[in-house]
Length: 71
Length: 148
Image 1 (cartoon, rainbow over the protein chains, first blue to last red):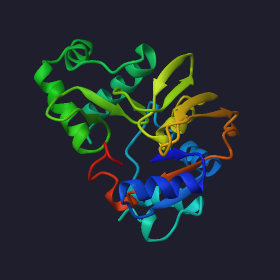
Image 2 (image 1 turned 60 degrees about the vertical axis):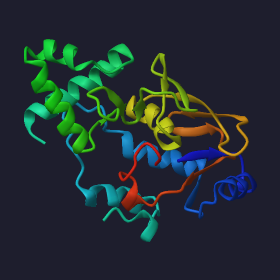
Image 3 (image 1 turned 90 degrees about the vertical axis):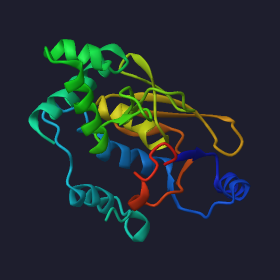
């Protein structure tokens, strides 16, 4: 996952590598995802999340569809 | 993941926060009063469970996500230290994991131009005009986590 200045830079970057587009998020969306995903990582009682719990985090942020399917 | 492995994982993460780096298997063995081989096995089980990432063919911690212990373009100032984020997502994950504010120095993947993002009170206050791109679909994130 990388940061880019703009959609133009993304298009150039994908073309330079010959990669198909994946999923693009605004930086504030990525921050919301990071906040939800990593918030409990240092909790003393941390346990691995079940796949459906992780999927629910993605769903709540509108990250749905085949690209975001964990299973 | 059994209770011992969870204890080892917690020790690794707490050591990262306390010292800015992950403990070696030797250091963790000393902390637990166990043989180093037992700790090496625990590190490997945690790697296989995606709870840590080890450098290839080693028992050294490469990633305790969102923290990374190899160079990347993502430097994160948070919690009184400068960290390395594994990727764009993890870079913003470090202030989240530390429950604090953070300042990210990174670069555009296309042109290498420096970029800055800042998180204050959980909100992105600088860098809102930037975008992030995921090339790899979620189902394949762990096929090659270094690339992902």
